[in-house]
Length: 140
Image (tube, rainbow, N blue to C red; front, side, top):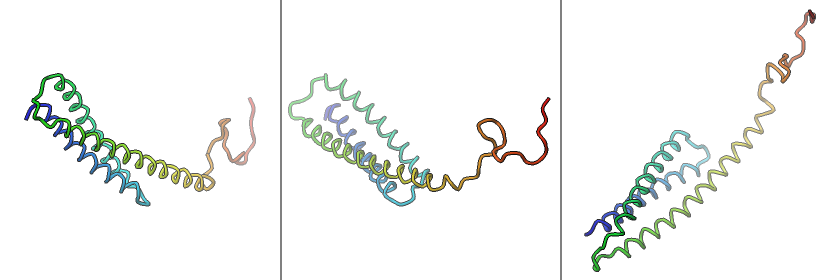
């Protein structure tokens, strides 16, 4: 095997790992209550895998300029990578829709709770929002 084939194989492994992480993300976004720390770990893992994939892509581009053997099945490997990438794009778009739905539900919940929040202690003019608390106002 040549270096290009090795890089393509590594890319395929990373794409498979990324799919697993995105499937986990989708499950997390599909439940009624999102675990913020779990979603944060998922995001960090996705970022790490994407950084590795970016590094491998840079390696692929520099290695692709080198000649490779005619019997190598680089085209098949690249086809696999292309298919996985297209599937991950679709999965990422779906997860984005799920996330938008969660954000919309959170906004609705905040709007329901907003009238019940405690009144502010001070108004925009710097005075207490409750008006005077007794006593006289003194001017100097």
